[in-house]
Image (cartoon, rainbow over all chains, first blue to last red; front, side, top):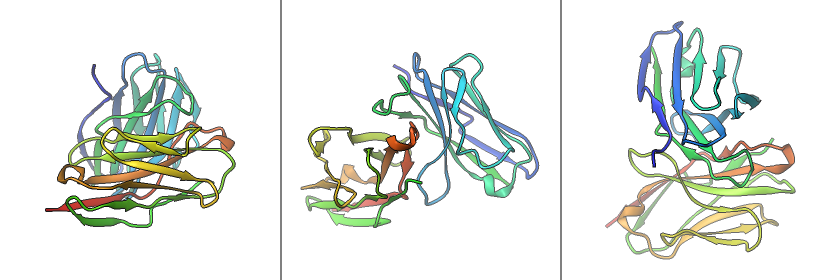
Length: 115
Length: 115
């Protein structure tokens, strides 16, 4: 079956602009996660959804970052007033449920470059 | 907060040689441990995981990792590597004490296999 998909695969924007990154999880997966991977680093947790609600948003770096999942499926990560330091690969993952032992399946990522 | 340290950023080995990729995590009472692999131009894939029970866990392609609670380690090993094992390997932990479904990743180890 289809895996996690993310669009766009690449996004180039200018400092100060607004961007939206989309994630389509595996069908039927109720849990969805966003991570950010900077060059040479491991992925860093941003936010976790269980259904439509954000169960843990402790990883969002500041109030310029926001994510939604209005129907419990597709999620959008929104970044306002982008800064050069926001440049990274943004990864989305989904799992069947929110249990610790459930495997998280990752998408290919969106590479964001802020000029 | 939980942290994960991968002691080697790069590991070059010859084909058919054994390899060990090291991973240590900060102390916690209850953790789940994971190794993810990222092949060139592909997304993160789960390689193996430790949840409970036997401290030695194995993957389908010959890798194994052993959970050592006293040393807070989860090193990954393979007795004989192939060219196809060339990839970046990430160790990750889920900290049950913090009630978190999120994964905390190490910085990654790039494994390069030379013929």
